[in-house]
Length: 257
Image 1 (cartoon, rainbow, N blue to C red):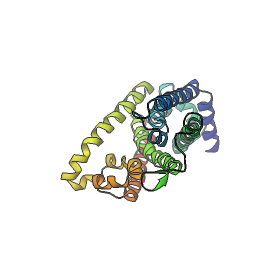
Image 2 (image 1 turned 180 degrees about the vertical axis):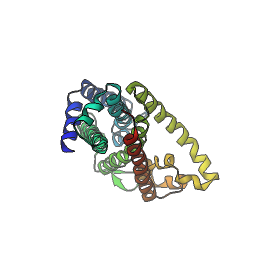
Image 3 (image 1 turned 90 degrees about the horizontal axis):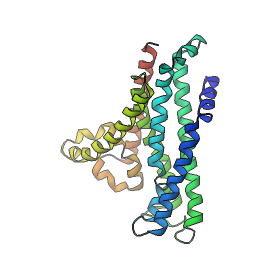
């Protein structure tokens, strides 16, 4: 298993897209930071810092593309046969890819968080202090940290579903397209779902409602819309994550090479 994980990390490190997306992420964060610096009334510096200068939104897209292709490319190029011939179990192969994606997502989030601190020091050193209270509870720095941690949970709720769908495609391009389009569709539907939840309260337990977890961590008052406590959203997210990954595991083990 450890060897398989190392191989996956080796492939990620040597992929041009890994470093290209990293640079793109930093450039986009810098652009939004500069805009906020010059137009603070339009884009609040504190709010955009807490959101890692929109970095997390882009991380989700990059990770969807990576998670969609990490499985489908093995089938598209026939490399899955080489792994199976080396007497690795299918379960080991799949779990090693999950672990690689976990490490990859941690890398992106850590990169965005550290770079946000750098941007703050360079562009907003006299604008606000990280120790200032954000909202009614925590400091700006702690809020940004909570946003990153809760965002990681929400990210993996999405990725668990993406990894399931990726098992259904042999073309990496098709898997990536479905993953990204599906993500935008989920965001549209989840916004409309709030209205439906008020009418049919049992809908509050659906996985799309769990996507509100990061927002509710920052704004606890959202529980009046989600009808679930923050802890219930966390537990629900983890349960659905396990369900999606479990189904993905079952599909992968039965999939024809």
